[in-house]
Length: 385
Image (cartoon, rainbow, N blue to C red; front, side, top):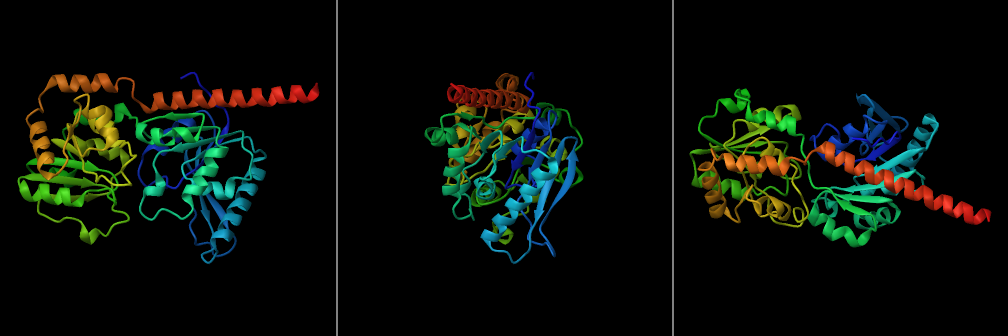
């Protein structure tokens, strides 16, 4: 794309690389094509001897780094060990010529004493609003914002809430791997666990957690027993025993990113059944453009970054409660063969891709780097005179 940051990048992530393939993985795989990316996960507390970092070569140019710390260490000891592990890492590399890329402010607690060339905060979610959010995350985010050279947000609503906190902040809503998901338009063979289910299929994939509207799914299943609801993804931070159970609700478990198009291909309508609460106030679901790229009609609860722009443009239907959600699904089922809708989808998604997002981010990072260097040069010239 014309932008080339030939530099090591250290990504501090609260999400594990092999959990769900989403924004961090999409972006880091692209940065790895131009430089070395080290994806640092949160530690496991299982070291039987000294703390260490386990390195796994995930892709050419990309290593997943997993710290292992003693199980009985305190929070303060954990941060000190992480600082020491990072110092050893830089020493072994023979360089601190790094870009620091943060997804979690919690990592700033043990990394703030280092002096990277550029600090990027990709604020993909309002983590402080999530269930079991770590103590002190808001204060650490303020410190990170003060140190960051550039800030990206995972959606427009999140940008609006943060824009007064930083002078160089830019919204980057969810993008898509179009070729990957458009394959769902042609797939005719569904995976075995879904193929055996006959009838109208409504589907959701993603993490099933505190954002997921269990009662909405329970109500849809009860009112429309001839509709089958496919739920694809891991269950986290909620009790699986409390999830709705019915003959027409099917929990298919976690699937690999490569498998998603084959599941999507069998759905009549794709769902975004999220609650409206603090944890969903600022989200911009990646699945919205992915569902659309797959050619699937979409029905969502009124998440702000789904309403604007998708529903406003007539690309997605919205339901406020069980009754209106069911009505929206019925509308989409009757609109399946509308070529005008699919043409409008493709026109909107024409310039929405992770390649475009990566290129735009890289350009802004390069501009920030040059600006910083210009400031340093100006200061040096003043001091010399």
